[in-house]
Length: 362
Ligand code: NAD
Image (cartoon, rainbow, N blue to C red; front, side, top):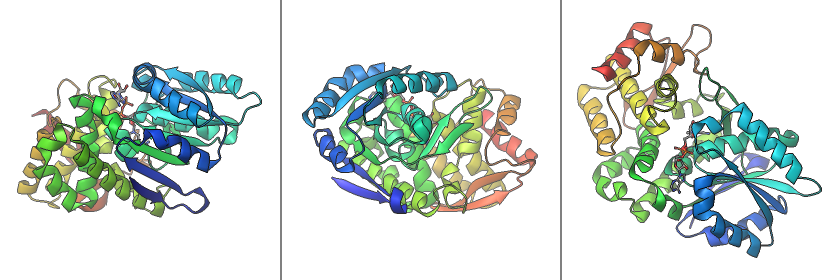
């Protein structure tokens, strides 16, 4: 079992990573002393698959609980769903000391985190991430979010969980597409911060793609460490350090929104966004063609798309203006100048942005 600390003074918390650790969840929750009644936000698939196990672990530790099931879709990150969940939470909460558990992937995590941040001006919550993407990224760092039809993640808050509990065994039931979606964020970490991890991903892709638990545990550990360090040094993305986590996300989010959140899942859209960011880096002579090709090949190894299909360029351009890194006419892109080395570039010309997206279409 590996323990990584997110160091935020009084709001510090642990990320626990291991295989088959669910049975120890009760001990960790007891130690936190955050309540007696757990309000578990999840979806139907996860409740059916793991609900009995979670129930038995919580009952043995003398916690009372209730499952709150939301639709298994990005659409659950909506103001309507959040309102429904908050109403149910208020009914459950009568005369009880309640805490929230986010049990699921990034969708459930972002929604549950948001609900926790606003219910009674802040209620304790715990992340139990069940996808690779959520274990390496979305469950850590306290960014909570809802989408509007205009763009993704437009509504949200910074609100840290009290614990992140990543049992690698949950990843066994992911299909290849879901695993590969998480690999997009893993490759992002390697590109922005960790050359060794990049080499590991190149050398071990056969084991990783088959879901080898030891390899996944190593990956989740490495990425959790990077995210914990970055979050600890720049919790609210005001000092610049945290910005680099958005590598590939400016265009990625725009592609996701322009495709109506159906065409590409988050990891696939981030993969395309990273190719565009690599193309911009190459266009600005920060990296050479050879490295750009090597990165493209790694994304392909993991079944991630490098070509855009059926999403019009003008819709992507329109959506990308909603990105939070745009302020007025100014834009800000995270680019790379080598593996593990980033550079923030401001005011990239619209011509170059369009060219980098157009390249995805060729
Ligand atoms: P998701 O939550 O939609 O999960 C993907 C699919 O996997 C769903 O169908 C889900 O039911 C299924 N699933 C979950 N756990 C499973 C398991 N153990 N076995 C089998 N199937 C399982 O998507 P995601 O990829 O986990 O997360 C994407 C979301 O995360 C996006 O909304 C994105 O914006 C958000 N995100 C947030 C942050 C952050 O910092 N808050 C960072 C990155 C991404």
